[in-house]
Length: 368
Ligand code: SF4
Ligand code: SF4
Image 1 (cartoon, rainbow, N blue to C red):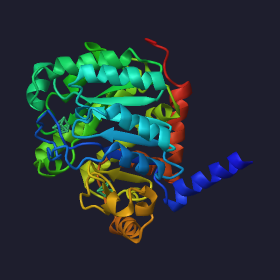
Image 2 (cartoon, rainbow, N blue to C red):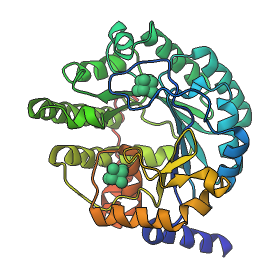
Image 3 (cartoon, rainbow, N blue to C red):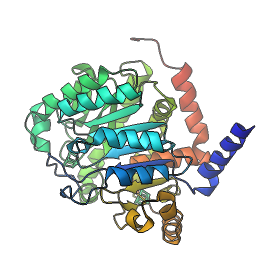
Image 4 (spheres, protein in one colour):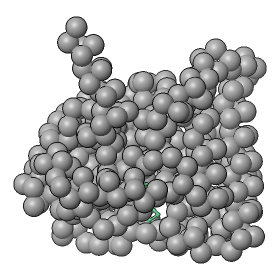
């Protein structure tokens, strides 16, 4: 009975109230060893980064319905206490899984992390960037031998299959738009990557691209996504491993989300209310909290609320930010928010249900 009540309360929060977050992204640092043109982090020092003690306070007060924490940076493995950060979030919040985005340049640290994460049986989905074939990827990201290191990191993560999954992610930019589809095929056929994502570059890089380049990006994004859907349906790529409910949801949304991201990029228009500032939020390296990655003006810094997340999230300032986002009909392609927008809006449920059924019963048995 109590369980049913909790499910109803969670549904109420997800669909109507948007009071507690479902998904938080934590930028654990703004330091990075790479130098990508499209990057928007600011290469700060470690000085103002949140301490473990304060991260624990934040995690313990992040509300009852948090389902996933996305750990990112900068380069998260620059922080030597990255395992402790992941462990704190998993132990002290209600999150049932974690995701971690890395450039994959530090296989030694990744191996140590995987070993400790595995001992604790924490489910972690690792996402690694891969934008060009071979050395060109290293040149583009400004790190020697990165293409070899990221593949080594992939292999390491794949050797911990019980609770970890690894995904390669192409960020589609004006620079790689002519070769991105080929890169996808290379990852699938040569590197044999089990799960591949494509994400649209955001910020100035996307906004400043000329019309011709944007049209090409639309065409290539669609080409990759259609290919990826087809490859998933006939087991040419595995998709997210079915480790937890989160991965099943991610495979389900994969077939739906890209169409809305594409439409949003193409038309630069509002499609449906954004969940940022309600079900979704971002914690910056220094404790600043923003509704999403794109909006940089903080609602407040957690320090002002003694690192109590829900105190900040329930404050007048936060409520006002949420209202303004809805009122302004804000629109963008930010994928993590799109995931929550899909899950929290019943208008998308028929499509999601169809995708779920297709994934469960309709994949062709071909090369399984
Ligand atoms: S690897 Fe990521 S954080 Fe580092 S410079 Fe490139 S985009 Fe920025
Ligand atoms: S639409 Fe984009 S910029 Fe606007 S609040 Fe949502 S995620 Fe942020």
